[in-house]
Structure formats: structure tokens, C-alpha cells
Amino acid sequence: MRRRRATSIAANPVLIGAATTLVVIVAVFLAYNANSGLPFVPTYELKTEVPDAANLVRGNDVRIGGVRVGSVTAIEPVTHDNGSVAAVVTLKLETDVKPLPVDSTVLIRPRSALGLKYVQITKGTSSQGLDDGATIPLRNAKPQPVEIDQVLSTFDDRTRAASQSNLTEFGNGFAGRGQDINRAVEALNPLLVNLPPVMQNLSDPQTRLGRLVRALARTARVVAPSAQAQAELFINLDTTFTALARVARPYIQDSISGGPPALDRATQDFPEQRPFLANSEALFRELRPGARALRESAPDLADAVTVGTKTLKRSPAFNERLRPTFAALQRLADDPLVSLGIRDLTSTATILTPTLAALTPVQTTCNYATLFFRNVASLLSIGDQHGTSQRFIIVATPQGPNNEGSPASAPANGGVPGKQDNYLHTNPYPHTASPGQPKECESGKENFIVGKQVIGNVPGNQGLGEMTKRALK
Image (cartoon, rainbow, N blue to C red; front, top):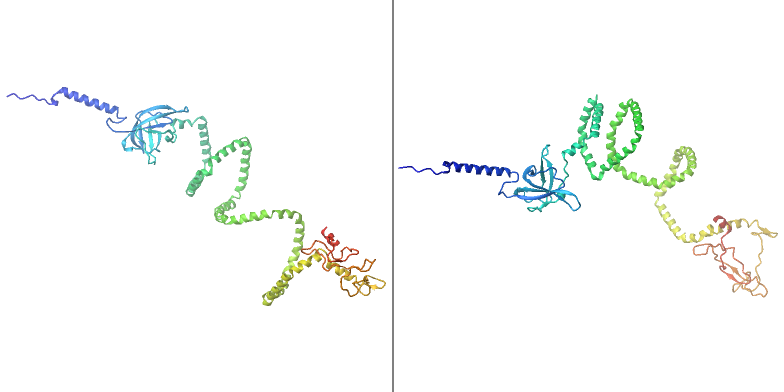
């Protein structure tokens, strides 16, 4: 009996060769397309617009947080309406990162110093995501990348020459100062502790440090022509500091040592002194008119101080003699009857206020009280051959009906034909410039109206007294 021939693939060299060739072709295909992703694997495709592709090529990595999540599949230039040129990069990402927040940012970064690049995506915090095929706008391409050639281009000939000069000068400056440098490094510990709040203050936008630096640059450019004068200034300063070195210890050293406690104390006290200083500033501002007036009165004040110094020396003895007087005044003030008397005087003054208001102009405006006493003094000196006014002078009254020299039934009002003297002229309440009256001194100045009876104030304003007129002038 004859055995049957084996018909398996392993026994057929042609089939084995064909299978091997197929596996190799598939492996080469997968290796060729490995950078753009495996076939038949779902992906998340996005496009991003960047200002410059920066030597990016197809197949470069796309990373999030340093982890590769995709690759670059296409790079195309694009021209905007305003004429500017940018690049649109197509990204094929893993579906695990889908969807990216719309505020995610894109940055092209170097992977090595040889020029290899990758795309870095920083995920945002928005709740809205980018759909498959969406384009990340140009505004999300930040910050502006810096290329290695841009960094190296800063070291031009002038920069290198300046660096060499700095190294030479700093080397000369640090030579022989090792111990001082060691002490300075030791003192950096408290400096670094206090430095962060200072630097935070300087970095605050409200500090405007950049504006200060630009102003200093302009200042340096302005003072550059006076470099020779500044050099001479440093020479003179060297002479000055050489002289100060003789008293540096212990005098200046003690002053510097006492400076920090004084500054700490001032930091505590100045806020409390601020209201006092503000009030003092307001006081001195209000005293300016008085200070200007002191220019004229300063000589008199100086004489007063000179004379007053002698008087003040005698003041203690005088004050000692006044002690019994003030003790008596204290007892008087403590006496309850005194309070009653003061209240009675206050009531009296209140009652007399209207009367005094009416009588005050009699003297202050019309001077009648002074005139009265002057006339009283003249009673014994003025007269005629019959005697003085006080002792003997006959004043005859007009004759006629109802005259002033005999009983009358009515005020004198003429009554005798051809005679014009039997008319009564009296003013019992003349104007004395009192409240409610015309400003005139009428008593003794009334016009005598012939042939007419006048009782009361005469017509017209009689004016003020002569002494009052002189006083007003």
C-alpha cells in the first residue's frame, strides 16, 4: 500500500517564499508610515496656524507635557488679507487627547541643538473643545519662539569686546579681595531673605521700573559729554574718602551700626507722627501772614524781649507776693454768696442793656457828658457885672399870655401884637443818635424859628458835634 504525499504549506517552497515576501512588504509599509500613524487606527486631526514654521518638517512629534501624542502630517504657507504670511500645520493626534480646549496654546520648540523641532501643545482650561478638523487660530501661537541663531547673533563683535572688558575689569576689581567677598557671601543670607518682597515690588507693573531704566539711559546719554568732569569728581571723591578713612573707625562705623535701629524706630514712629506733621504744616501755612508781618515788628519785639528779660527776672518775687491775693480770690470764688451776687449783677446788666444802648451814643457820638461837666466847671467863671452864672444872673422871660414866667393854661403861642418872642421852643427828647433815631446831635443845636411855636424835634438833620467830627476824621 502506497502512502499519500504531504500537501501542507510548510512542504511547499513557493508558498513559503510568497508568505515571506508578503510579510516583508507589510513591515516595510508599516515602517514607512510609522511617523504618520498606523493604518486603520482612528486619529484626531487638527490644524494650527503659526507665524513661522521654524524649520518644522513632516513627521516631527507633537507633545503635551513632554509626552508624544501625535505627529505633523502637512505644512502649508498661507497669506492673509493684510499681506502677512504664516504657516498652517496639520497635526494628527491620538484620540485620547480629544477634544483639546479652545484656549490651548501652540509653540514650536527645538528638540536638540542640531535643528530638530517638535510642536508643544499646552492645554487650556476652557470647557469648550476643538472639533475634529478644526483650526487653532494664530493668536494661540504664543509665546513667540526664540531660535538658537537669534541667541547666538546677540554675541556680535561689540558684545564680545564689551564682555572681554567686563571680565578684565571685574577680575582686577576682585583681585586681592577674597576675604571681603567671603564676608559678603556670608551676609547674603539675610539679604536673600529680605530680597523677595523688594523684587516683587519692583516687578509690579505699577512700579514702572522699565520706565525708570529708560529714563536712566537717557540721563546717561545726556551726561556722556561731561565724562571728564565726572572723572575729576571721582578723583576728588577719592581724596574725600581717604580723609574719611581716618575717622571710619569707630565714629562712622558706630553711625552705620546705629542706623538700622534708628530706621526701624523711624518706621514705627513716622506713621504716628504723620497727623502731627500734617497739622504742623497747616499751622505754619496759616502763620505765613503773621510771619510776613513780623518783618516790620521784629525790631520792636527784640526791644520787648530785651526789656522783658529784666522784668521776668523780677517775676518770681512778684508772683510770690501775689500768692495771698490769688488765695483771697480763690476764697471769694468759693463763697456761694459771690455766685448769687454775680447772678444779680448779670440780671442787672441784662436789664440795663437797652438803657445803656440808648445812652451810649449820648457820649460816644455826641459827647454830651463831657460837655456837661465842662459847662459845670464854667458856672463860677463866666458871668457879667452882676455876678457869675451860678450866683446871680437874671434871665427875663418873654411877657404875654401863657408866657414862661407865670402860670399858663396853654403853651406860649404869641398873643401880643407886634411881638415875636412869646413863643415856646422846647425839645424834651432831642435826637442823640440812639438806636432808631437819625444820626444827629440835636440837643443845643436846634434852629430857632421866629414867630412859631416849636415843641419837640425841629425839622432837618442838625449834624454831629464838632468833637465827634474831629474824632471821625
